[in-house]
Image 1 (spheres, one colour):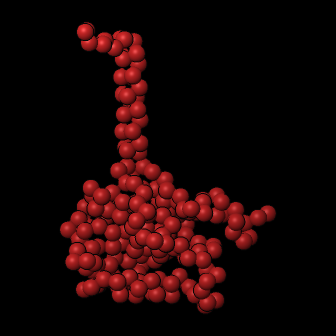
Image 2 (cartoon, rainbow, N blue to C red):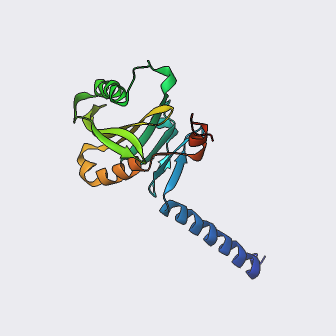
Image 3 (tube, rainbow, N blue to C red):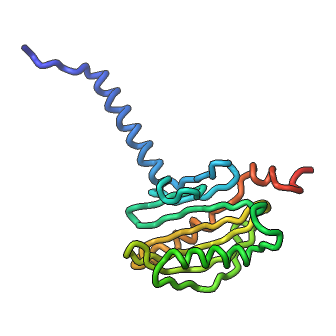
Length: 190
């Protein structure tokens, strides 16, 4: 019995489809990705090679990583309604910084410095510590928007902080409210 010969035309079409799909997949890996919070109100842009990682944190609204580079980010958003009326960005930063330090052993932190993230007031500090016997370096930024306080927590292995810090800063600086968040803010309606 003679072997079946693929029809040249069908084989060429199938091969072309596979090549096109592979190219599209590679293109998506080479482009930054915009991640949006589940409520559609906040976004963060991560570089090519980063993917969403739901397992990073139970309550974070945005979670992503580049496992090959050992770089990670989560965004935790808190509604201002849930805090006492005298809560400020500085107090929020102090509370969350102390909480971060309590979760690491041999923890050390720089003082929080004022920053602007896409026009929003923020505080930023570096923190180092040991988690599960691994030395981690964090860059943590707290940001105040009209209705929320946010923690943008990025991290990498301590041995990689020098090479990864510019990328962690770029990811942090990409945080922004969406048009949906701005439209729902008090005082934003005509």
